[in-house]
Amino acid sequence: MQRTLASAARCEGVGVHSGKRSAALFQPAKADAGIIFTRSDLAEKPAAQKELRAACQYLSGDKLSTELTNDHGVRLATVEHIMAALSGLGIDNARIAIDGPETPIMDGSAKEFVSACLRAGIAELPPPRKTLRILSPVRVREGDKYAEIVPARQFSVDITIDFADPAIGRQHYAAALSPDIFAKEIAPARTFGFADDLENLHKAGLARGASLENTIAIRDGAILNDEPLRFPDECVRHKALDAIGDLAMAGFPIQGAFRSFKGGHALNHALLRALLAKPDAWRIEREESAEAAPAPAPSRPTAEIRQ
Ligand SMILES: [Zn+2]
Image 1 (cartoon, rainbow, N blue to C red):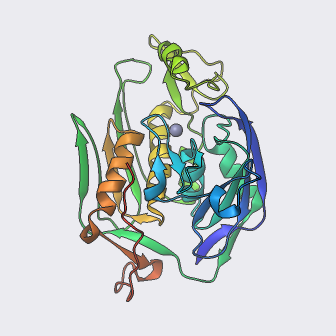
Image 2: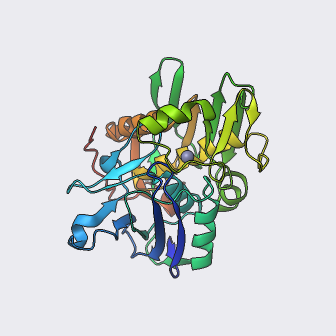
Image 3: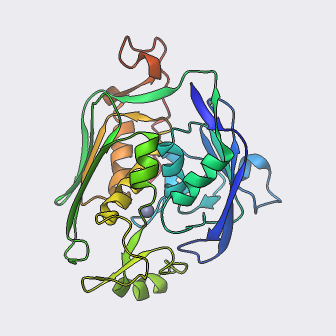
């Protein structure tokens, strides 16, 4: 069965890049609706113009975050942690109203969004769940970095990062995803950044809302936050969180194994675009048919790509 939220729940905080306060209102949606964001601050616009569907063709943004832009030029920044929470909990359909140009960053993890969804409750909808089943491997590479997705019975992530700063160093995290594993092992992992980059980010109009309350700050092998690390490998777990949120832009839960080396948003987006541009590498199936016969009438999300 497909899943949505049973009621509404709200989170409020500051946008990590804009520095502006915003609130996210999580609400139920009908079967097959997918994940739809709404810019509720744009009161004067017709509903269709302020809606942003979470789908690959609306992806914009850069290597620092994942952003959606709709056909009317309306944008919403930093959607990846909300997308990760919904995907990690197996929520197929939801509407999320944001009253500003960027989602609230909360504590830099997906923990508060998971809590909001669990507060709202999860409801089942009669139609069967659809999954995007990987049929053949797809890989993208940039120098020594790569991201790939290969056929597998279950969605899993396998992530390696390698930073020169010994506060991070080389970290590896792998997990077969379930809502429980996501909520306990991945959702609480906070975003991270290097304190010495902050000045340049501010000059670029970014990270204006970043603080020790929402970002693990690293300088010269040390963590500057009062709060200790939530996991010894919290940074690579956050990369898993980001990848789960980015891959959720496929529009369907992925049945396949994701692996990345020194990856990030840009590489995740490139992989998703490469995957959807290769229609023989995947198929949309009803979930219960995944181990039996393929679904009789496969449908596909559009593979139209916007750079
Ligand atoms: Zn992130």
